[in-house]
Image (cartoon, rainbow, N blue to C red; front, top):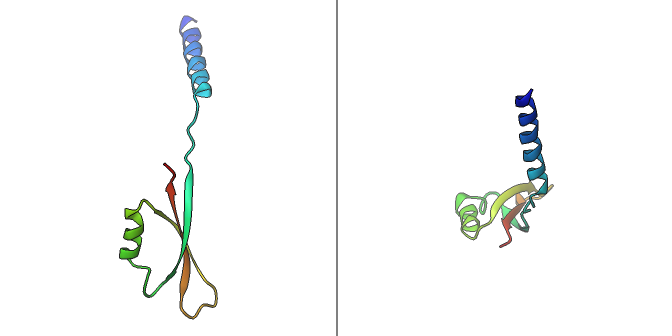
Length: 79
């Protein structure tokens, strides 16, 4: 019986400690670029953005575009 009470006390303490701590949320900034799939979308372009702290998020092709371009989204943490 004492083990159950002690276990309940420990579990309650850990639960309350988790609820009371402040959670730090990340703040992001975003940028978009229009890149041409045949010319711009290569590892060099993506690596150049990564060196500046930008992380690739998504690429969406522009519909009915004869140049085959896409809108590329990058994000990085605001410091």
